[in-house]
Length: 356
Image 1 (tube, rainbow, N blue to C red):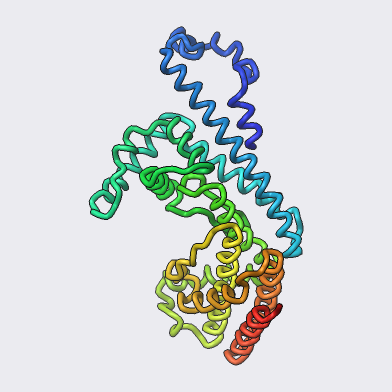
Image 2 (cartoon, rainbow, N blue to C red; image 1 turned 90 degrees about the vertical axis):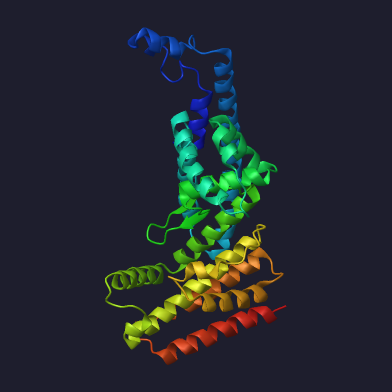
């Protein structure tokens, strides 16, 4: 269901939803509830106000999505990838945000979210340097959550409210703001966090950069994904414990892909800077994909080289750098071959840095 359809249903009358005669099939008490006769004025007002907040939230997300699509279409031209990819991302965005919206569609959903969140808040409260937001979570209602999501997207919210949303984020998505799945090609972004619309755009453009780079070299993306999966399986079964248990060929391929991932992630993080996201990569979080030290060195070099350049220049450079490195792949490459590839890549970064 699209935002437009969801918005229409919230605004619809019972007749629009085909419910004009549905009360005839219900028990008397159920029919009374449907017609509103069992609701107190306070309950009726709560339902109406919640509905208004829902419409407001959907309108905000619709406008943001339209702006995001326009921005991605422009960047797709920079990467010279088909615009149909942007339409795929549009569907991904709507699916992920609608999923989050439906997580609080009923009071039962809200109570389940609160229950899980209180468990985490209690553990955090045991630490003296952590905010205790248990009372805020305990009294929050469905309408309050929707209102909080509205405000966090477009206005200022308190530190305590930020903490509540971050806990909600952990419960729903493990604290992840957004992801790009290289196997499915899908982008997922989460509504339940303390990020505003500008920061949301930075997250989306980070993930878009991953997808754009991967779409440029689909065969290498498949090879890297396959290599990583097999590597993790071999480690899980105890066949290998580390690089020392690999063959020379496997070690060379592993190091190639570690460099490839480090370049990819560096470019994605740096793309976010053009949208106000100044966050430096949490290098150690990528330990299962690439060496933190390698990642940091590459990030620092590209960061210095692209500092002050326009987004258009950055995207053209990112496309050229990534495709050049990825397309240097050879099944039987030696360590000397890889060394030359890395040196050539560093020269390309320095060349861009020195360009006027």
